[in-house]
Length: 589
Image 1 (cartoon, rainbow, N blue to C red):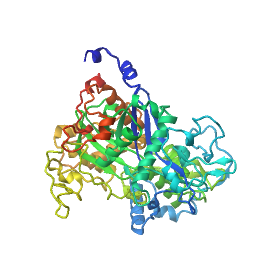
Image 2 (cartoon, rainbow, N blue to C red; image 1 turned 90 degrees about the horizontal axis):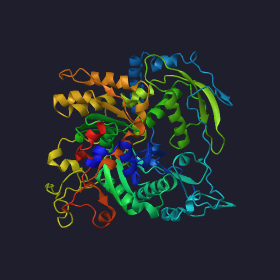
Image 3 (tube, helix red, strand yellow; image 1 turned 90 degrees about the vertical axis):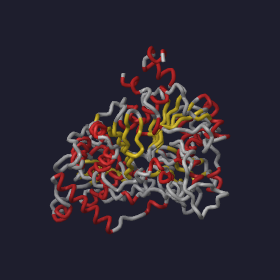
Image 4 (cartoon, rainbow, N blue to C red; image 1 turned 135 degrees about the vertical axis):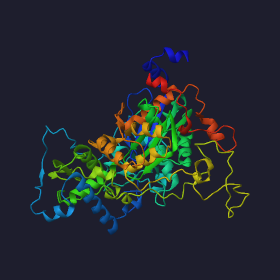
């Protein structure tokens, strides 16, 4: 403690953060970096693997091909009209009736105004061939530290094309910019906050893809070869949506496969509070595919306050495309973000540049790019309209139709060895159809939280409500009036969606109106983030790791490989739900 009193924060970070790697995996992006860095590397969390299958599946998860039903379309149009009345803009039918006088001029252009500071980037197709160089850093397929090619062996290894050779796999943004004509299959190992396991994407492939992506980032971005990783420890900042088995599997990947010497797991919500120097707050993590809400009191996460909404920033981007097509402002080009991920990159940029929440009609002249198979990008200048409608889908999720991009099946996630709690002293109900000799005393078929007497009121994982209702419900579940008042004045928006212009006053206004009249609460405030909202959880994980001197909850590699953490072991891993705020006073000082 004497050292803590004399050390300055920069000295502490430099000395203790040089051998700590912070990994924050998400559905769309992953943030990785050394704890001493100011900001992490943020990369799309996906991988494209070479395949010789004919016809080739250019997208691994075939479950994404669902269509909007008639009922969903009607609900979407109804939500649009509700939003239109709030924003004081014309309804859908009014726009359609006046479409002849509302026509936008569209045409191909060779360039765009250089004075425009908006994001109108033109993406180039990825070069899928190995570089003709002997440099081992650029020749990824020959890196000895990368995982084996067991997947490629059964997918076909005929990778030579004349004098060129296909890269065995491509990670990050490059994977999203591969032409659909190339022999590659894109995979996203995490979807909607869970492992993307299905009949089309087997469990072992998900594990191997996670391992390959993370290994590639460590080698290519952090320059940490596998031979040196035993000198590093890992801090896993995992989403609240992760189940116990998912936490265990990422621990196995980090300790067994990536060969870190030790690791610890923290939740995004608690890490975000530490990242902003807060001890009590309602953390609203607004990611690309999932929004999580959880309350923190005195440095301790309250599990009963957890809410998960199955939509995020990518759904807003899809809604932007639907809105423009409905108003006939979108160029006559084939834009499909499900089968052409490069289109999603373009839509995300348009959303970030032009969509914001404001009353009145919001139009803008933008450049839309079309990417035909293997052809250079074509540019189309057009006037986009109703740009304030898509982000309002956060409050009216039927506008977003998140079911088009559904969560993975949940039948795989049955795990009764809890990573979050001391559970070996609990009595589990039995299922009569299971042999006691195989599973004595365990409830095999029910969600694990339902078996816990202390958490009978834990909410279901996904909520079918809007953002304001989720925040209000989460805070009201904490019980005490003094705590509720404090939380309503300490709302923290993090994640990429939190950067949306006009979102903070919209959240404050709608949360205030969502509070029941019988609650003696009349003030709602969203606090400004001290750290960049997109990586505040990563930064908080770095702070937690640096200030954790005792390391009682850290798991060592050989302990995990040989013993794991199992019921009755006498040493149970505790997650961030119950990490005490010993360092909070230091952070706030």
